[in-house]
Length: 115
Length: 114
Image (cartoon, rainbow over all chains, first blue to last red; front, side):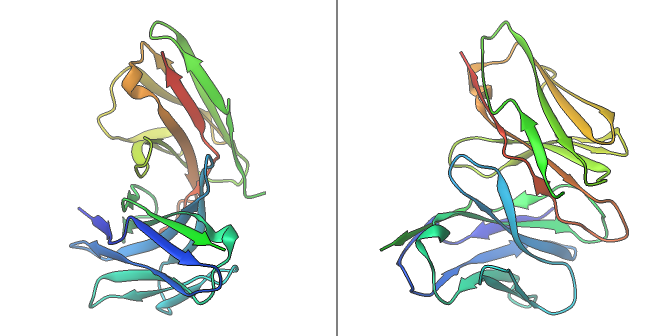
């Protein structure tokens, strides 16, 4: 079984400041990792994913995350946030060796960007 | 087209009603999912269909009945629901293949049971 811990339930930051949203996971098998973003009253949008290859993955809107196997972490970072980044962010894992199946989500981190 | 659509957007139903939620995708995905999301909580998996067959049922009560009539369509039939079933119901889809693929989510149906 897998579990995901998002260490901060809420992260307030000022516009143009850097931000890090922390995610740690636990699994007895290899995993694939994802970050999803949910804006108020909307569904989830995939922000970025780690399946294999380079441990640093980037999204088109400036977010990046680094897979650290030894620390079982997949922290999300952005060097300069915008008001429009205000949303809830979910880290999720699915076990490796399966091509589809159960996503296990963390509890979510609400990012609030203040002007 | 990377869109998953869900109808209706909002649904209010009484405990004796029967209603259905609909989900559609045209991305050629052969895995489709139903999730339930309560307020301020992460989504929780309910059902997974692969190649139009039910492959995972996360011990969901029988008052929720999924159906996958074809590779593009996923329904969730609701009957005799309880107020605690009020939540956002999310549909998702993904490819099936040799490795894991990301799931694409729809906007959800917000269900209120009165």
